[in-house]
Length: 327
Ligand SMILES: Nc1nc2c(c(=O)[nH]1)N[C@H]1C(S)=C(S)[C@@H](COP(=O)(O)O)O[C@H]1N2
Ligand SMILES: [Mo]
Image 1 (cartoon, rainbow, N blue to C red):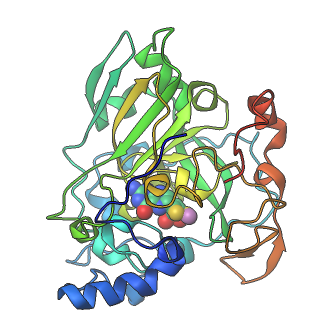
Image 2 (image 1 turned 60 degrees about the vertical axis):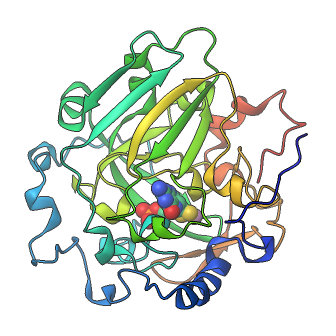
């Protein structure tokens, strides 16, 4: 086990979690003379508004692809969370460490957008988003989403199985992991000017996880192209894991034989690990994971092992009992 060297951007561990950083970082920002973008986003409801007032989805060249057929195999078992709520309460640290980033996120330019596929694969390529969308079988899936901060929602994602993208890339037999990376553009994403974070945001999965039927790339939500605050134009949805694994606005997927170290793991490895599978019986070091708050109603309900997706994914972890599977 290697020793982490303290770096300049590292926050004290007590501060380095999504909800705790909120307060802390604002104090830091005040000290640096910066302001967090999007503080005035309170008025946004439903579809994302562009600064000019137009609906974000209208200017999106993929708008004609939606809605897509629903795959009825995935039932959320609870009401969907209204769009007006999920599109105004977001984690997207690139645009600020608080939840009201929807307005600031409209600055993200999502065309042109290219996805680079590289590393240990036979078909490395850089593909434009609209060419990728033409190649992929789009469907709608209703998924639960459980944030490590113990709130949850249920969302109708549109997109395609990550396994289809893996097939396109044709990983070699040496490939064991996928490393995924978000865009890096501090001019647009003011949160990325905060140099104490290890930008760009990185996440990873094993190849077995990435080819599990549940692993999904969302390109739309609520029957429309993905609004920017959800991580347009390409965002991962791995609903059996804590929400931070579902990386937004992906620009690069690399096949590798080394386990990627994710953004949150770099910041606080004792609190956020590689596996991050939802488990109500394994508390976060600083709070319980036994229950979750429904974003729509504020009601608290019990959290389920693997967020209720054990039937599909429990088999991925047999033989890995020695790993920190639930943080
Ligand atoms: N690039 C990037 N991806 C990200 C995040 C982020 O800050 N940056 N936050 C994560 C967390 S903690 C959660 S809970 C979900 C939130 O997704 P939502 O805003 O669509 O609800 O996105 C995840 N993906
Ligand atoms: Mo999260």
